[in-house]
Image (cartoon, rainbow, N blue to C red):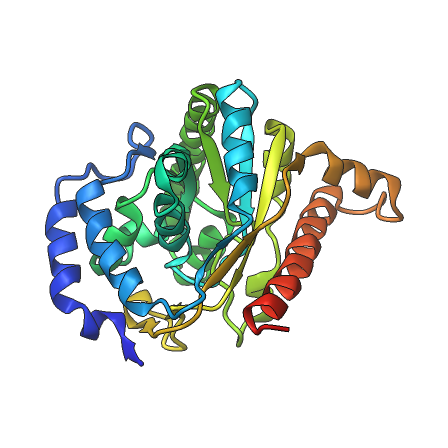
Length: 296
């Protein structure tokens, strides 16, 4: 078990060179298309760390979602988030399932936080390899509030975040109209065992359920790139593991909102309750995936 920055220093350097030409993050550059030349390097790392039995279960649901997207129906994937390898692994698994899988993989556009682009240049390639819309998450602003003491600088950062997120919403409408599938991590950050709050869904995700029609949940069991207690993403530990991703059946996005409306959770922060219901369903899917992963 080694930090990825040590074991794959040469490959990370090559990815950094390939990513040097990308424009800085601003409101005119929030939608980025994936870079196949970087993705090929990441695929090699993933392949070297997958144990027997790894793979994507119920990929047919994602194929069904893709068919709906081709019909012009807005489609969404909400996934658990344990690792910066989650999106790369999903794309890797899909791409190995023939032409249908490759088409589904190429149609996915992930919503990605700005942190990986700006604060971790050595790992920027993990993001730039994949099509994504860059946002300024509320979690990032909370971290910056604790760090910035100068009020003028704080105001500047808040205004920048608002500008980026307005542009991101326009980009989201564009890709939705193009029949592509949007992937969101509802926790907004990787789960870290020493920080239970990192598994709580962020309330902004409720807005996605209003903007899309059909969705699939994805549970992630196993982890080949484990968060480091040091906090730096470049210190994440690369390990071999049996990584199993499980897709739920396709279901209407409105069904989650309806379930909250009809339940006892009608009072209080309704958006948070909607996201809590998403996380509850992901937990159920995760438990089933873990039993299968362990052969139970």
